[in-house]
Image (spheres, rainbow, N blue to C red):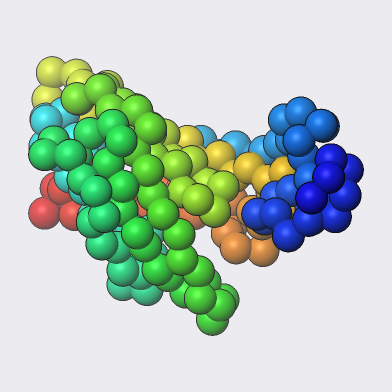
Length: 170
């Protein structure tokens, strides 16, 4: 389509050709929490680097995840496909590992606009695991609506981190 003309472009372009308009501004909402886990950083990192483990903690069996193109260390550039149901609605997408620093940080981005950033801080006997979840959308305020409709905000992060802690410590 000619610039500025209606097109059947991908979701997020609002049906208009973006060629002459530059990058699309994103609206985002971020939630953060952390938890103390009685385990060495290596054990916590090894658990979290497998998205099957974190999806189980987050969605309690209401999701499936499959490897698409995973590096031997599950590091940066690894890709998984996932399916889930929230509020009886089916969702699916692709999870891409954007950053991977062993025992320090993992950043996973979903094609649905959600980014999970895990930060690991070891101490003498345990690990502090911090989780930041950022929901982004090219539609202004849609990120805030998504957070309100599909989650309980930071209280969900407390539950999710608690599930990870329980799985690692038992």
